[in-house]
Image (cartoon, rainbow over all chains, first blue to last red; front, side, top):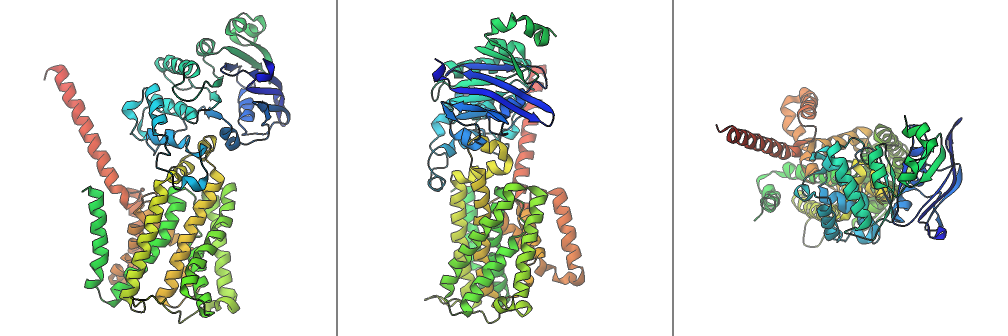
Length: 253
Length: 326
């Protein structure tokens, strides 16, 4: 079981000056698992995320993807190895249509730069884009420019983009940030569907950072609680809810 | 027939028959315009599509011009000089792309501006190679069987054919997945990289391909005016080319055609203003930037957007009237 972990983070450390943002964090994410990361502001969640995504290089520790050491790889190499992501803030390409946003999200994953010069305009990804457009219920805006959509619709496009290249692991940075409450349930349903019964590709694992506790407890299989750069607890939502230490430090507040 | 196809054919027809109605100088001016169309098509790729703020384009234009002039003076054919100009500019373009991997926006603009100044100094000071401020004169027109390129009319058709070919190549490139990758790089490089877009390579190539277009334009320029000195390749010329892209509409495929016309042909029409010419031209640019920051070719988009908004509000009013039973 342990040997088959999709993502393995061991003893990760990162300091900014005197502040130890991440202080010896270790955990594993199994294939198909939805793994939540919670903790108060300043607990090191974002630094951990940025290390896993190659945005920053950790001071110490090791990150493995399918057994391969990916600690020093940048965002581009990680994405090519099957790591997709969303950002806290909206990051769609506003001047492209929704469909083009999806196509550009996967087109660089096949062929070479030279061969792509002669590839068809949709890179043969039209059917895959359509499948995601249907799954995300954004058919009616598929040919509109992404920048003209409502915030909620753009959020859906943003999430869909992360899944276009059929990633093995998707890191979601506060998927509910700024989303109105009625859409939060919709995003939760979508993510469960993408996890259990994806329309494209095979099942992927997620790592989710989120402040909305109901959302995290409902969605995630296991949850890691971070406080001051360290792991306070890892467990199922029920275990985390019942953890006295966590209640005192975070949830009870 | 689609409206755009019709417009394209009409435009081609106008360009083909226009010389019939022009005197020698008019034809020369049209060729001059096309040379700048080629150069600014390249700059539009770098600036308009890939979003890299380059103020060094005239340096590539100059490198192309001097490459052909120096090679032809050494007895080498124009037909070898032209691809050499494009290739040298492509390579130097890759090199100029490297600063763009580190800095962006105004900082990149200044880095490219410094590059332009350095190249210009080489042209002015290395007399053994470039002739210094005296320049290189008596540059011959190329020889092509069946078309007399020594006449301005013949040369115009030659430049027109090359412009059409280079436009078609660029159109093909932008219609391929590369076009979307360039746009993604311009709009949000961090997101693009997280989706597997190799922003490093695309940045370098946007500079290199843009530079190669400027190199070809420079080669045609040298042979068109038949005399070159460092003056047309200053930082001021780079700013003028940047202005042509912005005025035409950055990221619009036909933007450079319009922008270069404004930059090359409008000054001729404004000759009546004499000493006030630059004042009129400058004021026109200020007004344009205020009213049309997206460039002249953004007018149809703006009209369409307004029309859609009006339609939508009419629909809303109709729906509201129906709901209230009015």
